[in-house]
Picture (cartoon, rainbow, N blue to C red):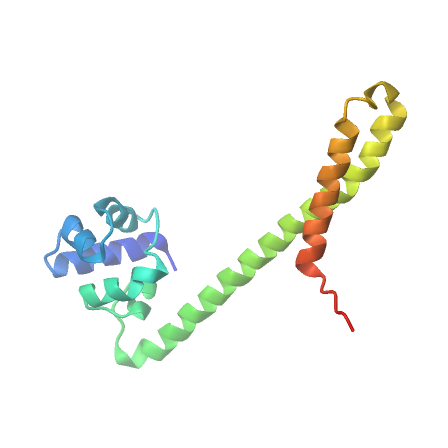
Length: 155
């Protein structure tokens, strides 16, 4: 799914219906700037208004996501392609999120020993609270990760 192609398709369909960006925006209860962003490929329509947008433009959601008119012979194939693309993007986003969370976990696990190292090698910092602040940040990050991913079952 190409945002720019989708934007050009929205613009073409809007013009076919003889609508201005402002008129389309008013029908959708959004700003004309949002419509402009779609048509330039800077963003895509929100899922919450996609059905209404498609009704106004006289297209299907599948056609919108494909950025082209689809004949009935190709409709099923295009729908499957769009679903696979959405699944691929969802999997990619989950992997990215997991990577980020693992990095935070590593940081959290390293912060507690860092607290002890700061206090051991720099005893003059023991009264400043820097070490305690580092340890608390590490503990919070670890607890958040633990609660999110581990299930504790009571018997």
